[in-house]
Image (cartoon, rainbow, N blue to C red):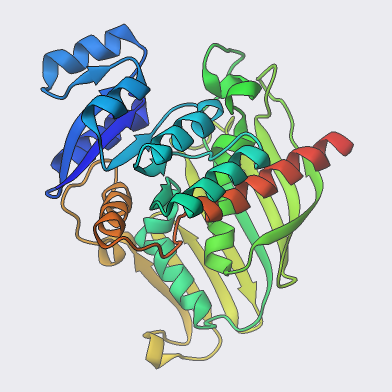
Length: 339
């Protein structure tokens, strides 16, 4: 059994608790949060030891792995402490507030040879995984344009009081929403974003952070496209993330539920007919041990646990991959500030 402890009992922390608690190869040995109300509820409903001091939890429970599910400003200290005390680490996104913090975490993981993963769950959604497979196979020929989008109803009036509205804590649309799209573009296009231009980050309702992000992106392979993200959009019920890629041999559109591919010539080796083809999440989603909020969350958890068991790193969602996303976030912020 892999012994796991969790730091942070917000929405994602509690989700991870439930998924880890259901994993057949995991023993949840401790949880930590500074909120007394959360602790009291957890103590009442579970038998898992609760702590308010994460260092004490690590020292007393001696976990094999730690989940860091706290605001981004706390990641670097907690992640490095856990690794220096013998733990493999799963860290939620956004990874780091600064490139320096992120690089220290990457370097520490390499130095101590620790399995590491960041919670960019889109890389485990069946439609996005299939889109990457088809793009790697050259299904639409040579790409010439892409469009990465995400919209959601998070901030629809003037308010504050949470870490998402605090720039110093890691808040803002660019950190919370755009990060997912940027990470997905790097993954599916198999070429990192290296340049941004014409960036706009308007404050629609928020006083300190951005509520939307628009920019032109250039990949390392020269492919250019647009980023369009807004968390103040009440035309959608929940967050929607999508990517459209156009090529000289066809077009691909993918979101969390549907993959549409148009090819100018049939590709029977890939199961594609000439013209439009559609695939849907029920046929692409993996069979998981437990489904909470979507198969992807259990899939990413099992991936992390199996990497620990086998002590392997395939860099599907490593600290290093997450840092590439943080680099682009910083470029977007710098470009917007210079406009």
